[in-house]
Image (cartoon, rainbow, N blue to C red):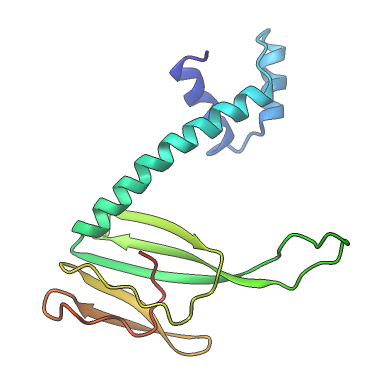
Length: 161
């Protein structure tokens, strides 16, 4: 079992620094310490799962209690896995979402499918800023005050909640 400081070192070397686990494995071997990349990957996966729950809880609380939410979506082409016979499938459209809550919480989300007419209900106590797609390829800012108009929704908004 690895010490928390060693796990932190592995994750800092892997993610902010960008060092692959095989290079870390070689570095540790030169220093006389044996730690294989499979073990490093398992620790990174387990820590990612734990942190994922924490981030999701923080996201839910922030979105429920935020005064202002700003969001934007970026469309991306997704290349599906090849068919069994080796032929490639046509690209599909997905979206990466950025949600900024009260200027100090930033969350990212990914939707594998394009939902052009998805209209979620905004939080009752928040201002919601988004980009309404009025024409293909043209984003126009749109803002509502959910406190003064509790049943209003952002038309054709690119928001995931």
